[in-house]
Length: 317
Ligand SMILES: C[S@@+](CC[C@H](N)C(=O)[O-])C[C@H]1O[C@@H](n2cnc3c(N)ncnc32)[C@H](O)[C@@H]1O
Picture 1: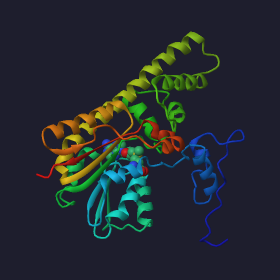
Picture 2: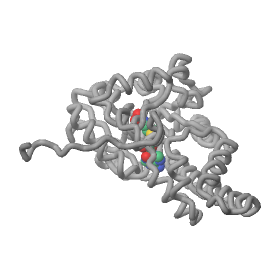
Picture 3: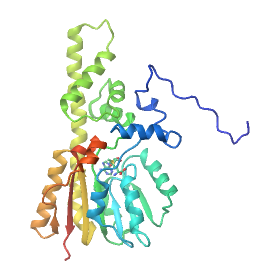
């Protein structure tokens, strides 16, 4: 063996015939070597581990209409899917900015986009909260021709992130097993979340623990989990409100913005901001109704079912 040969890495071991946990899905996590497996997962309407499937890409391009020479910003870069669709359209001569708060995915996404041929002159990436959008203005020449925000939770959200928010927001002693159970789940209702927490806790308790104690402890765990998530959500509403407030000042006259949201609390804020902007003349036109993912997309990617896409155009004055 020469020094250049990478050391042999054993595949992850798992119980049973199929991998269940995120880390065990080694084929899905390595699409370069297991493309057929990844295709099969997508054909089943699922999202392969470690991957994020961008939603409403065609609809977003139809709204933003990027053209060569323009400057755009993707406020939630994520896996870089939307960015990769927009980048070639502003070339030659254009420039894109990407923002994201995720310290783990951001370097990986940046590396993928650089490897796809987009250097520093075409793409600038910032690890920052989109509430700080105004700080990009000097570099962007004073304003953007278009802006995108995809408020969906990345399917790559890590177990560590979930554990940290359960620990930081509510001192949850069972943060570790709960984060392992919640990771990668797409829960649409609080009832589904509560069921998952209860099932996880039943596995976490010692067999000898009496039933009444289990019930009482699970009740506390449920309260703490909901508290941790509520704090996170409130915080997200706060930064969304700040971003929406700053948005008009960041768009050039005639600039376009598209925002993809996945639950009613976010969509209400976006709708209110756009409608207020239209009334006071900041926006010349806004979406009357949200655009939904096509039937085909909803079938092939169930995450798109709850997506609502709204747009607005900055007034010319
Ligand atoms: C659904 S993903 C975006 C996927 C992306 N559009 C794509 O096509 O791959 C949402 C991303 O928004 C990021 N995010 C969430 N809140 C943010 C905030 N306040 N500021 C910046 N990024 C944020 C998350 O870290 C996550 O990577």
